[in-house]
View (cartoon, rainbow, N blue to C red):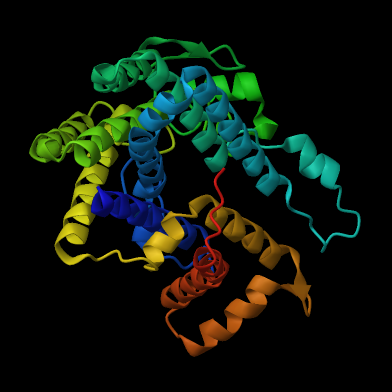
Length: 379
């Protein structure tokens, strides 16, 4: 079990490092293609990062929740999940509100940030998905997890495909998977309001890539992580079977993409099948490497990051905002630090990547200090 849990922590660490790397280039105008999200439909390595984190959360629940249920009972577990979920939502809101434009003398923080609070986001989705997955695990027999996960994908597809919706001009749409034009976008715009959504200017409907309806298949991603965790971590004998299912999921997802596109922003069913299948293979590979070579020894950078992932995400989020808020000689600190790198490295994309790597290293140092002193932030 030890090697398998260490492999899980390492995979979580890889996911959070990748998230930091793709979110903090030196310049968004100079980024290697694999470090960018697909323009709309499609899949890049970057598109694996967030579903990978959700999947790993599910695997972790497969290990931890049965012990918690045995020790505390379902009521206590659900209350704890509610607290953790709410904490993640509040942390997401904190990062959104942690911004002030010092370059504008009369900057109105109340109207610009507080009044336009983005209700949903990365941490918010993690919190909501965590809570909903725990509730399902407390009410559904374990043998039904896979069925429920697939059922959620089918239900999401049925809603997106067959429920009609209308724009302000009276035109009715149905079954679309377009930027700003889908049932998911329609509901985000209707319920949350354009000013509180990430893609506030999308037409005909503003929407959020971590929106309301697309949270349903995100729960499926987490549940599939639970299923993988039960068989890869708890029952090593089922390794071959779960790998076959994972590969089948990838093939089916790719085959169906002609009708249901692979799309991260809408978290489409094919996106879930493909990314979950890939994550099962990655988890198996990490487990095999650690079992064979004891690759992830205590103090390994991926373990340091993976055992304190939310702390690392928050450190990076605060630092990234400070680099843009604080100014030196009339420019942001980020620009002030990035320019010497561009002068030393002629390739603009490589310079941008080097800045992102340096950013990751700076964020990692306080985490290493915490790890060595046994400080682990459990949300």
